[in-house]
Length: 287
Length: 266
Image 1 (cartoon, each protein chain N blue to C red):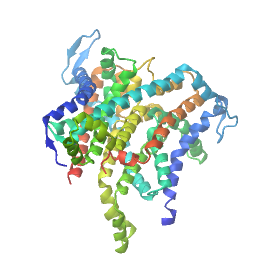
Image 2: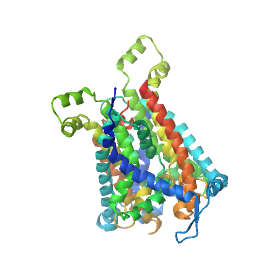
Image 3: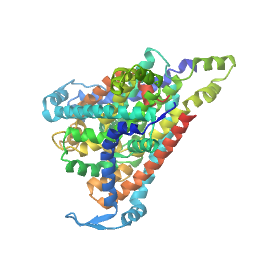
Image 4: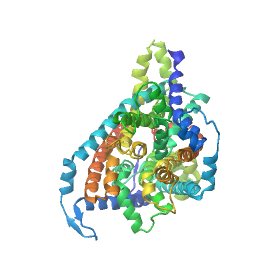
C-alpha cells in the first residue's frame, strides 16, 4: 500500500507511546541503575561499574540456567513445529468439524498459566494422577518431584500440550489461504501427496511458520509460571530456567545487582531475536 | 492412509482433553477420596468444592478482581491501539519504523525482568494493589500486540474508502467511528480477544502488583496450594472455573481465531 508522508500522524501514536513508555522505559532505567550499583540498605548506593555483569557472566548458576533454557527451547521447537504442521494438514478444512477442532484446540491457550501448572501437577502425581499412575502402572519408574528426568519429561510434555495448538492454528490459517485451483492443477499433473506438500502447501505456510517458530522461541524463552508451579525449578535446580532463576534472585533473595545484570543480559538476548523476527516478517510482507 | 487422516487430530484432541478431564474428575471428589488413591470416576460425587468457592469471599472476589482488570486492560489496549494502528497503516512519519519495532520489543520482553521495577514504579504512583495497576502493567505487552494485529487488519482495507469519505465531507473522527470501525469490526473483535487472553493468563505481574484488594484468582489459588495443606479438590474446582471464561470467548471468535493468530497477516 502506498503510504502518505504525514508527520501529524505522531499525534495518533502519542497515547500508545506514553503508556508503553511508562511501562517500559521507567522500569528499564531502574534495572540499569541497579545493575551498576551496590547498596548496604538505607537507600545508600555505590557505583560498581561492570562488577555484577562479570560476576553473572562468570557464574555457573547463570551458565546452568542458560543451558537448561536452550535445551528446553530447542526440544520444544523440535516437537511442536512438525507436530503442529502434521495436525493442521490432517484436520478438516471446513464445516462443522473444523469449528469443533478449532474451539477444542484453542482451549489450552486460554487457561491461566498457573492453572496449567497446577493441572499438570495433579495430572502427573505418581500416586493419584492419570499420567503418573499410568506410567508407573506400565512399569516405567516415574516421579517428577524426585527424578530430574521425569521432571523434564513432564515440563516438555506440558508445553507441547499447552502450545502446539498455536502452531496448528497458524499453519491452518496458512493452508486456508491456498486457492482450490492449485490442488486441482496438481491433481491433473498427477502430483504425489509429498509433492503437493513440498511445492504448494509448504511455500504458502512459510510466512506463518516463521511467525510460529519465532513466537514459540520467544515465549518459551521467557517461560516462567508453568514450570514454576509444576516443579518449582526442582528437583534441586534441574528445571530452573532463566526466568525462574531471575525471579528467585530478584524477589526471593533481593539480590538487586545480580538480578538486574541478569535482566539486562536476558533482555538483550530477547531483543536480538526480536530484531530477527521483525526483519524476517517485514521482508515476507515486502515480497 | 487418507481414510485414517481423522485419527491424527482425534488423538491430539484426546491428548488435550485428558488433563482437563482429570481436573474435572478431581474437582467433584471429596478430599478423602482424592488422597485415598487412584480412581477414574468420583465415587462419592460432590459439589462441595464449588459451593465453597461461590460462598467464600476470598475465593469469588478473586474471580471478580481478575475479570475487572482484564476488562479494563482490554478496553484501554484496544482504544489506545486503534488510532496508532491506523497511523502506522496509512501514513509515513519520522521514526515510524523504529517506533513500530520498539513497540514490538515490549511484546517480547520477559515479564520476569520487569517484576521488581514494576513493584517499585506502581508503589511510587500509589497504585499498588489496585485493578488499575495490573491493567496498566499488562498494557506493556497487550498494546504492542493490539497495534500489530490491528495494523494487519487495517492494511486490508483499501485506502480509497478513506478518501471517498473525506470527499463526501466526513470529518476524521466521524469517518473513523461511523465508517471505519464497523469495517474492521472483526479485527477489533479478534484484538479484544487476544488482549483478554493474554491478560487473563498472565500471573507473574498480576501477583506481584497486588496483595489484598485486587488479588487475582490465580494468586488465590497459589496461596491455597502452599498454605492450607493440600486441598486438591478445591484447587481443581477453581481451575475448572478459570477455564470457563476462556471457553466462552473462544466460542464467539471461533471463525476468526486462525486468522487472528496469524496476526491478520495471511
